[in-house]
Image 1 (cartoon, rainbow, N blue to C red):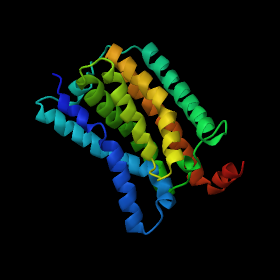
Image 2 (cartoon, one colour):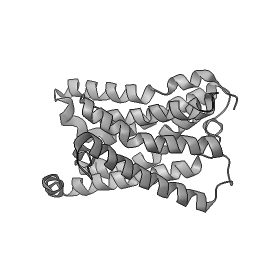
Image 3 (cartoon, rainbow, N blue to C red):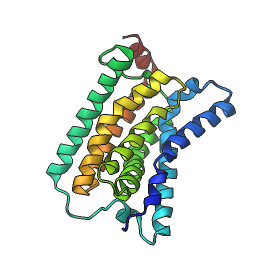
Length: 239
């Protein structure tokens, strides 16, 4: 697919969507925005589906398809690559969150409690499948496909998509708390820089997408556990 500089303007779209959905949700439910933060995984799935549809429409408009947008080529990925990138994603992602928690909250390890707070069990079960499947296609499709692939400067092609890739997490869930926003941004910035650099170098999205799906499985698994046993969530809060 030929480079289209206009695609980079799509990079902030997920951050905007998260803010809008949480603000509108707060208004409709007449709850404080912090009171609906536990719905972040459901909101993320909705935003993922919207993002995927946008990417498909953009690709079609360019007389191409989603797979060409992300430079996917069947049969070039080795299992070794998937394992290495998956381990790096898990390790850097976890370490990034813990270090950011120490910088912002003075605790190590620290994890934002609302990220594993319970939701209705049926939705928790459904999202165990839907969220890990949709996240890689939405996020990696946007930040790698529209960002890394369509920014001409080799340095900006890494750091600009990485910035917006990390920034979106500042609004998952949306809380108008500057310390929380910085914490979430710093948590993911090291990982997003590494992933954008790797993709720029290898032009192979599959190892990144598999690693991304695995880290999301860990997240939704914790939500499922607390949704099955809300008492366990309260115990974890008191630890």
